[in-house]
Image 1 (spheres, rainbow, N blue to C red):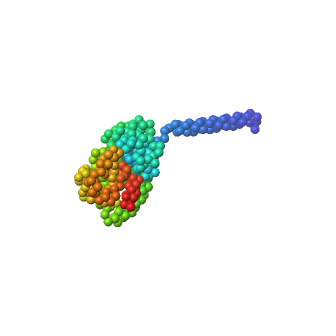
Image 2 (tube, rainbow, N blue to C red):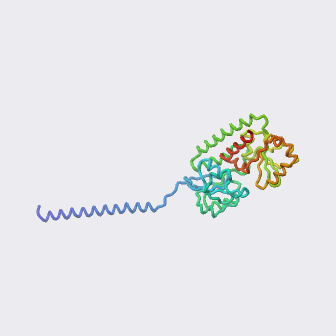
Image 3 (tube, rainbow, N blue to C red):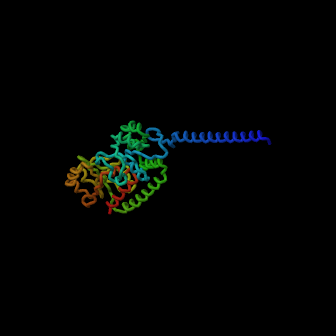
Length: 328
């Protein structure tokens, strides 16, 4: 091989190496550019469509922050091990956490009442979802839906028929948002077992007529046998017998003259915060002191929250605990 041909081959080999190196560099730059483009593209979150009383809402498949404007739904969330970022207050009960759930709500933001929510506070929380109930939706839904997907649960007010388990429907709906339906069913089953054990003790008592009364600022009311989950817990699930003055579906008023004929072996007495003066007048009445439960010291004064507690697993469990103490 002559000298000129040797030089030609060397130059050709060097040219091939340069072209290959350039190609690799361009390829690497292209891959890097693609990676950067991919990193700059927003990642779409998985979502699901939820049907509720106002139609359909698209919510994240994984909910990180939820605001709840209903005591029942706070109970439901805590039952399945989830904690809201914001909850409503009950103004007439001090404007704070409901006491029976307070220990599990430490650090949760208070966002006004269900009827008058603090919209600015809710906006600052940047919730993924807001939960409200049917009877407050008329006043709040449109405003809240502008902040985040707002789910309206429940049924039209008092349209429950004879279904005593209707309160569980919303628990299961809330659990579905977190893929925890099985856990919710376990909690319901545990409560059912507890309820059955308590009912057996109640039915073993010879006389178990019960009157569920509420002392308000200026009047005394008696709750019905049906129409509210607390009522059906007492009379249907636990097996107390209603008195002759207990209405079937709607609570009624009681005058002191009428109350002397109350055939109650046990009285559950719920007193409103502004009802203490009225309670004193009732206790001082000769008509009240003619009632069997009063004479036998079987009047059990509860807190003011049984009407809230009846809607959830945690609250219903606490009612059962109180009832068992009452019949001891």
